[in-house]
Length: 399
Image 1 (tube, one colour):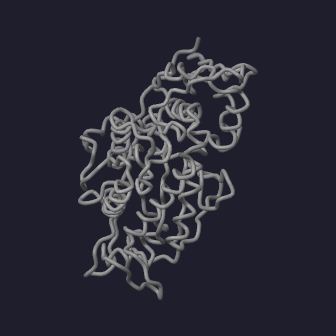
Image 2 (tube, one colour):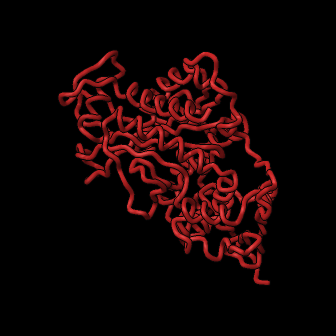
Image 3 (cartoon, rainbow, N blue to C red):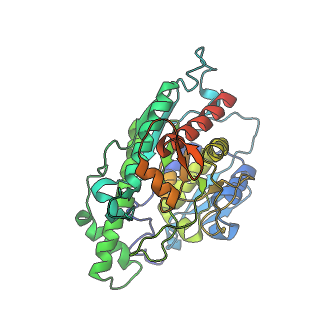
């Protein structure tokens, strides 16, 4: 047997996976459904999992360590008797597990636990996150973490009034993780040494900073969601932006659009990461896709109507279309992979668009104001109301 490589191939700040996590799902899904979900949603294309997940008539043979053939396989057996009822372990409830429509029709979300994840951190951390810009001496800086938290407060109020139990992954402009970039230097150097023989100190420092504000922050939030909150749904709030022509000289861009993301479209390099491969399969066997897609599809309709924004698409490399809704895309992101329940990830408005900048400057005003000849709510209320309307329409149709 060849010696094991010094390092398993893992995602940033990932851990060697425990494949026994799939044990409760043995014989809970047919081969046909397993392959359909893998090909239609989770893998970017079938070649991307070849040799890592081999499909046999009665099982999927999954490589335990992608860069070490001698590490063996995990055999995941398919359900062969479709008449046999199976229980699928989940901490979240499917729509048919909720009670019927509440007697109080104004509290349509009664009994549903929704977590809102305001994307990024904001505040003093916004510049390091590269989620900050300022145009004009007397303007308010545009910081995504600040915008998402303000939007989350509006959305929390809406959903609570409709009967939902609502939790937030953060309530301040401070990190949820206790770690800081200096604590992650060794992890960053080790990660880079697997890919670069002699990483520079500058590259190690930049990688440690990214580990802090992306990997450690989101993994800490995921632990909070999966271990303590255990909601039925997570709504990940973000604002989009168009690429700068010159990042050192910010200028307005003409693009302004909307799209929603469900988990999927894993590339070959992502499926080669042992922990990512397990996390993808856990979402697949829990059938999370069906609920994410139905929610995203319904919410996209109300958001498109409320915001009047056009859709944004992907070229098929890091995002793929999974239905006929041009606003909904499958993409693998750390947040929508690590939260092990249905997740809808939002990317409306381009922050570096002139009108969006003006609406941010206007703040959380009451009533309507005119922008380019159209009277609009403040941007936070509009965002929150459009999400709320879609969530309500979905749960009214399934309860």
